[in-house]
Amino acid sequence: MTLGYFQRDDMGTLRDEAYEKLDYLSQLTEVVIGPQNEVLGRVPDRVELKLEDINSTKHALWGMQTLGFELNVVHVLRSILPSGDQDYVPDIVDHFELQTSKDFELDLANCTMIGSITLVKVSPHIDEKKILELAIRKSCQQISYYNWPGKRVKDKIVTVLNTFEPGRGTEWAKNLVGRAAWDGEVKIKSTLSEMILENKWRIRDVSIILKVGKWINSYLMDEDDSDLGLVNLTKLKMMLDKDLPVYSVDEVKNVHF
Image (cartoon, rainbow, N blue to C red):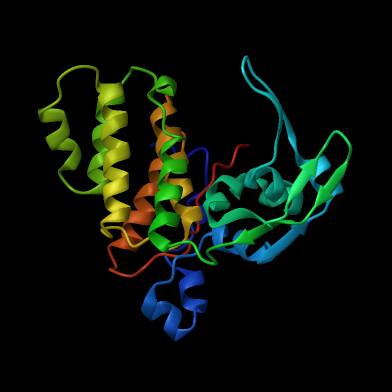
């Protein structure tokens, strides 16, 4: 790897400062930190919609057999949450439902409403396994063999997989049949999922999981060995080898002169 793009002093440390700041109980239980429960908590348990709310959030339906308007949980959540939370609406939508009173009637043509319609939070917490699954899915979306140049791609995939777990890449290469890039993408994604969901990697902050996908793809895209994706992946693996949960990584970044 060429060192001209970063300084050795920028390599940082292997300390997990976020873990060190957690209280004893949080360290013991290895609580998973993700934004979804924070976003979920920002929505009130009940939000009664007025007629003007419905008019501002409803969406028109234009189909061959369906004409009219639709009001659903996604529309309502997007109208309530700030713009910074919008990306997480699909992650929390299943925790809400729209409930109507028995006498509910809505006449959009004449702008009248009888009864009530309410957005109700039916579950106040997202399961930690679900949060990890969502993070893995988003991380894997950043990994795409379409962006990888053919030169040395097989060897690089072997390196990534061996960084995941010693011998994993060597075994993959030995049994490879077909295109290395396509098969390698599938293998990297399935292995990453295995490492997280089977608790082989005790990553407890989903922001790190998202970075893993970025690091892998940037390393496999790189043609001149100046990218630091593998450096960061290796650094993370060294922290995981301490057999402690990981909450933060002092990421090494390219420094261009």
